Image 1: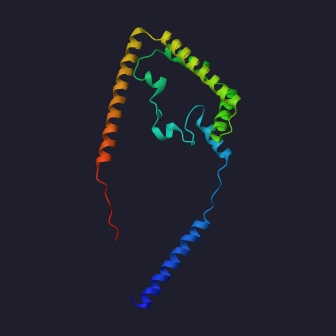
Image 2: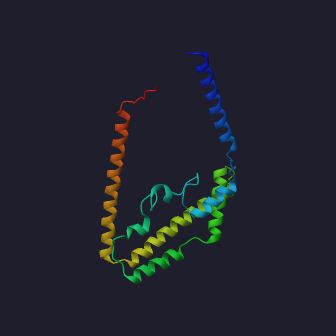
Image 3: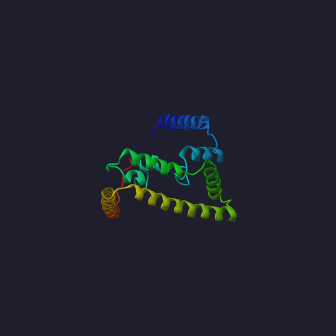
Length: 190
């Protein structure tokens, strides 16, 4: 290689490094603060998302990671307008208050930051037990509204959903096994 080509190559490389360094340094990076994370939590709502601020609905589709929940269970089931109104009233009556949401948010932030106190841990366990009791109460209230035929439809739907979950789990395991047994592909670098 001639000296001239070597000089041109070195100049081009130096120019590329300079330009990329200039572009990188010109980008303004806003530091993330805990208030930014709190705002994200507020946008998501109560009990949604994971520790890293990602909402399940955004990452895992319309109904989240754990299925469609109670509302999805009634999809495809003929409900009267009176039943729909009663369901709305039950959901509204069991909705957590704004104060409770704020308290849970503060506890979850403390837990995430590692500054949670024993009193907050005890309060979190108490709130969790209350939430479970409230969920059982809601289930009982909803069961009282449904007809026998509707309950049978729901049970049939639960069985179908369980079968679909099992099929999906088997497919996922099969994909994992296939991926593990695939030979590693290497790319040729010129």
